[in-house]
Amino acid sequence: MSKIIHEKNVPAVMRDGTTLYAEVFRPDGDGKYPVLLQRTPYNKEFLPLTTMVLDPIAAAHKGYVVIIQDVRGRFESEGAPFYIYKNEYNDGYDSVEWAASLPYSDGNVGMYGLSYMGMTQFQAASMQPPSLKAIFPITWGTDVYMYRGGALELGLLVSWSMSTIGPNAVVKAKQGKADFLKEFMTLLDSIDHIEEAAYSQLPIRDSEWLKLGEGYAAFVHDILNHDLRDEYHQEISVREKSDNIEVPIFGMAGWYDLLLGQDLEHYEKLKEKKNTKLMIGPWAHAGFASIVGDLNFGMSTSSLLLELKTDLTSLQLKWFDHWLKGIENGITEEPPVKLFVMGENKWRSEQEWPLKRTVYTPYYFQSNGKANTKDGDGTLSATPPLEETNDSYVYDPANPVPTLGGNLLMPANYLRGPIDQQHLEVRDDILVYTSEALEEDIEVTGPVKVVLYASSSAVDTDFTAKLVDVHPDGKAFNIADGIIRAKYRDKNQPPSLITPNEVYRYEIDLLSTSNLFKKGHQMRVEISSSNFPRFDRNTNTGESGIDSREFITASQKVFHNEEYPSHILLPVIPR
View (tube, rainbow, N blue to C red):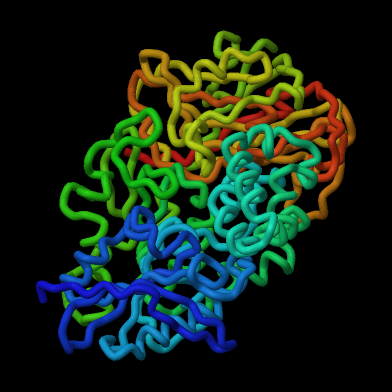
């Protein structure tokens, strides 16, 4: 089996007559082999991405057929215009059964891939194609809901739709027409100047990047029109179809991945099913290097040497060897959850997620009314506050707190992952609450939230929260963060404006993490009202920046006393 055949543009006809095209890597000869299928909107021939998580040559040498297919409306495949996820249910089913019917297939199909290619696995699996035997989704997400706490994930929406989807969408829509070259070059120029063409423009709906988007504007406008998880999102979402999924699942997620929240929510719906596994590393989106942001987590997190014993391709093949070839290799006996504890920089096996032994522990905000900046008097304490002066700051949408690190998918100049926050912490519009140096290690593993009691002079505004690990040298690395838009403060009720200067209780979801705050380190919480351009700016007027260009400043107050005990709730793991 030394020779590998690579076939290009292999056609698959869908139930409606649309033809999708694929690259096929397979062993030479007359044998029949199981198939590994990846369905991508990112160009089947762009090997740096399509082979990022699994080497098709190595897999073919191990006795697999590997198929990488352009989804409907993208690159070589027919069916333009492309619409995000819309056709991946039926096309996924049809593609699995087509792959199983190929003359060199033994009828057993597995699916793999990350991000978009991860969710397409669940879409296909929910349709229960009989030939699909197992999937290996990596940072998959569950729908197209691009909001956190009611705030639009502007950085994600713009970067993905304009930079990733836009160029080929324009080619599909305009090639051969008189204005093709002009529009294509205008789009490329807008990508090069994304701040001016997209991020900074108000109203968002009138931005230049949307005027260019004949091939992608339809789904972008739909996302802008549906800021709640309504029927539009439910129709696309795989979360609502979890009961239909019966195949074995090995999922991978990242603590700094933009899809972390959706992945973990989905896992909680799937975890009671047999043969479901979850592995969470320190990674950002589509990155499996040992260095993430400013921190080196060690070679055990590299896709080349996971846990210092395997690589990512080999791990997936071990999974598929069992479920597609029937090889008893022990993978089903391994613990269902494996997570990486940052700070300690070690992998650990667990029996469940979240961990049953978690002790949810509040740490309270305290100050004498001057918690502004890292040099203020804000402290973080396990002792509940009594009577204290509130803290205050002014949020100006014209001068928002810039995005620095976190769970991003944005241009490379917006650094993602853990980044030293010190130069942001000198801003007066950031409240900083810092613990004393820890006398012993504290492990935080699980979902994190901030309970904030605050008022605003505005009828709507945002509040942001960030959990930070302060090292003895003063460097302050973001661990988790979140945002809440005031009018979406109660997710069980329709959005409603707030009464100016009235105190409200807000819960800010910081998603989940696993970090060991070491002895001598300090725990820190930052509170502010913006994280731009990752999230769209709140105009403070009650009108969304999606449709309005007017904004005003807001005077914010954060309360921490016996009546209003603002705090962060940490999932502490006894050690």
